[in-house]
Image (cartoon, rainbow, N blue to C red):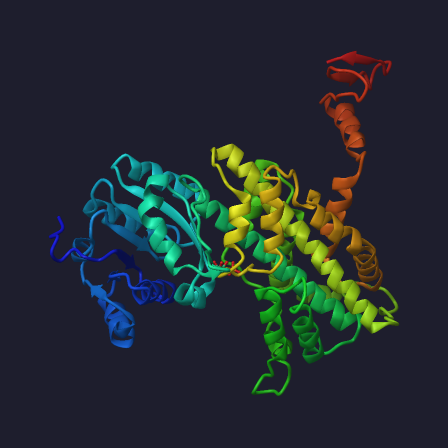
Length: 483
Ligand code: 6PG
């Protein structure tokens, strides 16, 4: 039980690895009395020693003292590893908290876990908030994008605190209540899926500029810096230029040439694709990004392929007009990126329907404008598009984006075709274009698939000209019967 004279912390953070301690410092520096706790007290002490001057911290060695230092209703943010460690902390704290208190999981949890935890804690009267927090270490310290789920009641007291420490764009906080139970972690997962796609597309653009136009990393860095001044302005384009500029001190080579070309992952991109598959939503751009990381990391198979010497095209890409080529790649990147966002928002719409969340896509795009990894200038356009037409159907249907793809499509097609001809793998660009063409096709070859399914398995089909379900007697006289 708290003693009201000592229980004065407005927010508590448990789990003081880099993200947790930076978040705690952010709260304290914004004027909140911040309770801090970590499994081993050494980290808590280190935070006080190194950054105690950031604000008013209350450090506790035990979980009980930590909870006792918090003002009611208590608000605790858990910043520990997703999975088992999160469950362990929740179990310990939930024994110490009281009905009305708010427990926030700020890690990258699986939204289904969040739904389970929220339900269990709701029975005890504790508000469990699964919150996406994006922006990496620096974001946590200076202002992340925050995506809290959980009850509206919990947001009423927690929201203003989170909004204050979040990034701000045009004075608007990059934090909003996303929806009940697992909605916050769901949209964070999609954020990361889009992040994977965006990173893959930028990497493909780099590959095209290098293998197609023969530019070196420093020159490509210049191109990205230039792109970052226009409609592609974004955190990921900006940092790519920095990465490509970097020279390895040991070898004098561009750093990118000495980094092993095997992309790792913690799994949120894979979760996005798994979830989308379960919901039946095509996220081909995001899936290709996950698969490309998988292929890059298949070291033994790639080494074996080098030995087999699988044949490629005989001649390289002969780019005549470098400037025109660079502009084509830029447009192809922009169009493919729009497809990745469109697919991501489609999964959010399907998830909202499936789980009963009232997600405001416009507000979501607004809180992704700053603080997070996928922050980009064009999120303003996405916000506008959803504000104008909340049930847009697809981001590609918004006039602004339709105009971009119509402006980009010739370049998009020539880049993908040229890459295929010259053997440069562009799975993100190519699948996004294929998705776009599939979406706009009046008729798809799915009719053939339905015929095949009916042929070998009597799976039936529908007709375009009348109601009902039909089957052709394929092994009989091939007449059509009602099914
Ligand atoms: C963020 C990031 C972050 C993510 C890393 C690494 O929004 O701050 O999405 O949450 O964990 O980007 O992700 P991978 O290791 O899976 O690439």
